[in-house]
Length: 108
Image (cartoon, rainbow, N blue to C red; front, side, top):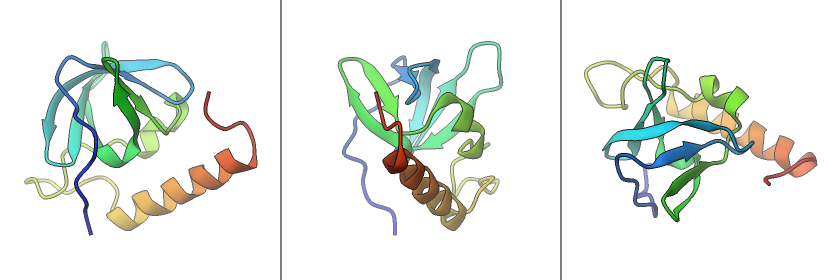
């Protein structure tokens, strides 16, 4: 079941990973997905579920920069191509990351 995201994400907004690294800027949005324009790299989609906050002109993610590859999508789900990970796989990864964060480190 997909719920509406409480975050308003706008094109041009910087995207910052949980470890503080800038990943790029929001290029576009489609439903519960947003596309990251990653400079010098291939653009990719993420779900709004990965967002912790979207305020003060910055989108902050719950995932670190070295975990982004686990969440990247080539297209939003429901588009002409399937997402790289199923909803169940994304949920399992999210739960693992949350457990890891609760065990130590946490967000800055």
